[in-house]
Image 1 (tube, one colour):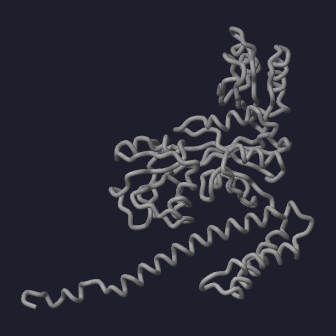
Image 2 (cartoon, one colour; image 1 turned 90 degrees about the horizontal axis):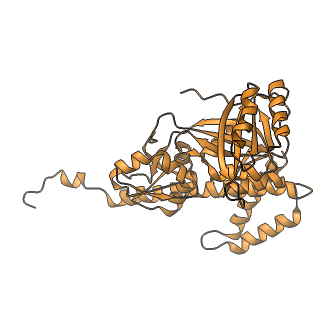
Image 3 (cartoon, one colour; image 1 turned 180 degrees about the vertical axis):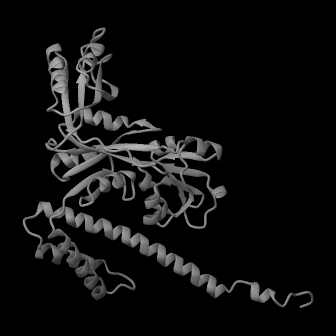
Length: 372
């Protein structure tokens, strides 16, 4: 053909190669989704270990194999599915035999809370929970050995839902963890920043990245969890959507990091507390309590003076409305010291003498601030 460059044909993409690349990308994506679902199945199997007398349950195994054989369809033969699930069941039994301990956290795998839990105790099996209340309930019921919840962020402030749960809980605080939060904008592979129109994440994460979102005109859409938003994007495959989550979420859910460290302040940090059914009995240098004062002028100042008069330093105080009693407030207080410290003991005795209602949430070791 007149005017045709003889090299054009060499530059044209090979349709077969393009299709092959596309199919391989879909296989990789499917493998990643299968692995996340397999993680979930093994986790459920591990949690059943506390609810049955022995690791092996021949009747249940037969039921599972019968169910999957009946569900086999298309290219998956009953024989292949049976062999596959026998291997999965054996792996679950192997892990159950270790009698693992569990730690509950709010969100999906890859959440900052899970990273905090691993920092606290890497031997705990992390169990995702839909809500903060589910974490408290799981620890209280004995389903989890520990729970971890965020209480405050240097940019987003207090997590008020957690504060309200702490006020009413019978659980104890046995430790704390501080985690530097390096929020990232994630999207499906191949997505450019200027293609993104909406961004989903937990309201706290959206608040932490307010300037970044506003500067680029991105619509913030609240979601129940940062990592949950990443998992949603993996399964939904929504082009034009981004999520704010951790680099771990990007790896777990096959997303690309479009922008790093997008929080409004480079010093973004979240403090978490660890929950238990028992009080911490080891070394401690920090305490937390819930305090409710009378509804009269000067009552709070008098209660706080009990700490100042005995040289007990308060590191945090947060007020929450006293539900059902309009105009009254309950206070969450963190202070330095341990129960054996004479100044702390005298301060608490003074509160009792004043008729102040208080509940000690626990004494524990303060977390060291992470290196910048």
